[in-house]
Image: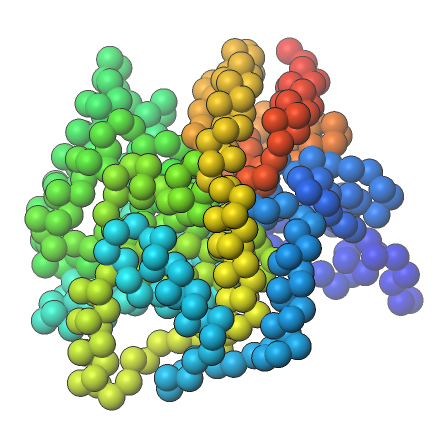
Amino acid sequence: MRPTTLAEADLAHAFHPQTNLAAHAETGPFLIARGEGVFVEDEAGARFLDAMAGLWCTGLGYSEPRLVETARRQLDKLPYCQSFGGRAHEPGIRLAEELAAIAPEGLTRAFFASSGSEANDTAIKLAWYYGVARGAPERTTILARRRAYHGVTVAAASLTGLPMMHGGFHLPHPFVVHLTAPHFVQQARDGETEAQFARRLAAELEEVIDRLGASTIAAFIAEPVIGAGGVILPPEGYFAAIQPILRRHGILLIADEVITGLGRLGSMWGCNHYGIQPDILTCAKMLTSAYQPLSAVLVTEEVYTAIAAEAGRRGTFGHGFTYSGHPVACAVAREVLAIYRERDIPGHVRAVAPRFQRRLALLGQSRHVREARGLGLIGGLEMQKAQDAARLEAAARANGLIVRAVGGDTVALCPPLIIAEAEVDELFDRLQSALAALGD
Ligand SMILES: Cc1ncc(COP(=O)(O)O)c(C=O)c1O
């Protein structure tokens, strides 16, 4: 019999990503029909405050007419153009120029892909190619951290430090070596301060480099703030301690700003906030406010020049996607950046973040919560009992609020950056009732 309802068709034919597929067969889909501002609505008209901005991505909310109009105009004019063999178009060129103007110092070139995973895959390939270009082809190891999330393609999933993304897939691939998660509440020793913990992590990095040999290591990759691994902020002094070690050993630093880039922390980049000077930076998600799939890999002129020289020797640079620099996505991203400038979106984040963080910290007093932590408009509630993270997500949904259990033990909050103060209160009022509904 032909499925008749959307839910039936979903159960019969859809294959959901990042879903408990056995449970899904019982519960069926959570169908979203429309969105406006920071709210989404299901088929029956029930409204939910989306405190996850989709998947950490709809920075400008769900109903920004300028982005819709920009996409429509670009679709009319030039709906597609490839970028291979030197082909180019205005939205792609101008976006690269505009990103170079706002990027952390020294990042001058933009390579485009469609997702965060593709951007991180590309970053690894660039680090390898750069090694070959500078006469160090044996630099193949990439250092990452446990609890990091860098995506799901074979290489990006290998960088990711979450067992759930490895089990059943023959991953991680052995070119990745994972270091201790920079997670103070879980990893610090008795009596250790944050600064001491950060120094111990830096010492671990030195030990691993000594053991493997610096000449075998291409790059170190890190999210300024770990997102999907549990909203983990680096301990005080962490990046200041590790950067000189990487530099001294000629190891590239890749900053994965797929979540933290473009205003989430109240600065344009997580790198600005933490004083990180990356050789390569990846961003996606809020680059188009998720209205189109687009990611960018930004590199320094030095990395670009070496790669360009190597590509010259080989005849061509053998990497790129059909949708690299898609003109509709690039046009939408340019409009996002224009709105950021005109409305000072990072400034708005700085204005509402104190209220957001204050209300988050209050929830830290609940006996169900082990730690409340956050920065800017990102927050996490690490639960005393890991299973309470999924329970709180469900209780919040029953209360008209979308949050997400991440990293196995933490409930993440990452609302659209345009959230108003009153909506911040509404978010936390709903979350507070959901916490109360967990009972004793
Ligand atoms: C920090 C980080 N890097 C990479 C990715 C992967 O991005 P995508 O899902 O677009 O491949 C994500 C996705 O959540 C992310 O949070």
